[in-house]
Image 1 (cartoon, helix red, strand yellow):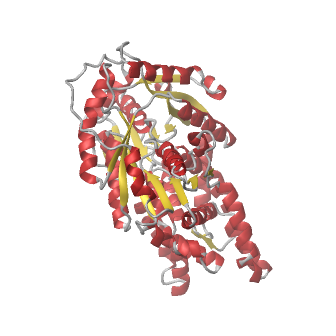
Image 2: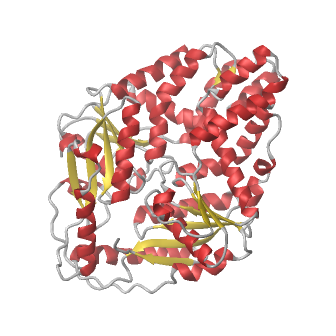
Length: 564
């Protein structure tokens, strides 16, 4: 594997959700450790499944992995890091500044942006070389759109701190943050130094995933970060020529690789095979980089038939208007399913607005040709941020003097402004469910949870900056908690990590007072007549996950795998 040869200290794996970044990152870390290196494996994904894949309960401190000498792993826990970050920023001012000033700082540090910055601080320390006891640090990153934002932060925060002479922001007091600025600049330098860091694109052998990888490559180049190579995961080779589904899947992968986007063709490429069994545990992960052994077809496994998506539609269209949100782990097919739901609602005579909160989603491509009664849009962070900043200066800034307006304009240059702007756009989108159906393709699990968890703190932050929160912001949480208005569809694949992550999301939503209307098992092999041994083995493995979903969900619908 080319990404194991002459590996620099820092290795980062990124790509669209569900392409297998965690498996590849884990297998890489194990291979490096097996060669005698000291390796730290880190997840920066708020919805990390590193513990499950490594079969080791991880926390925010490195933990040794049994059976792999030299390998330790950790999860960057955003909430725990944010708590520690707030204490570092606020602690020195308690008893020094008036209580009201301390409360003001605490309020500014209450938003989800602080969670993001705290996680980034940990990322920066590890990437910048403070963890000198490791020969290699392997990063299993969040899905593409959020990874890009993470990688933009060294430049954004360094520039912001350089331009800010004083005052406060969601970073807390800006005075005395020279060490923070140096850390961000060192991180930026490490990312751009090919002798210290290598970033690899991970993709599946399908057009959408490879197209996303090409877009990521272009956006990274604009940040001055080059891609060291492309890893195509889960490439399928049919073993049963008589199996039409196996032939269709092999042909689909072959077409995608033959039509590789131009920018990706110049990159060194590794292809990893579709594995018949789950990649859980060190032994299974070691096998990922070894030549594939022909799968042995298992005994037939009976899987009970489940309702289809059409059977779910009466529950979704009840009430004649409202919001339908598809949620789940990256790569489970939320975008495609949201488009199918929108098309079916339109076919039934409803006006539908289809949109996405996922920075890496391409909802228009999933929708395909225009459909009557369906409008397609996306929340564009750049557009929303620009409009929001202009509005704040026009309203809250109107009553300020010259110095006050200059300070407000400075604060609006903070990267945190984008978070507030996108949040407001999300609130407006939910509000539009009063006039018809709004189908929202959400960002992957961890980022969706941060958005929902942040609703109350963003409400306060919007009110602080603007003077008062808009009506749609004030009513957001009650609307999300109203099952007659907002219908959550949890989407999963019949595999361990997607099902268990959806179960964790279900529990988190319940704590927030939100209950899903149904679960959808997507891309299932269960209804198909198969003879290929790899596909038969994967279908047999679905049975336990069908049972788990049925035990958890109020309703279950199944969408079978379909060739293009």
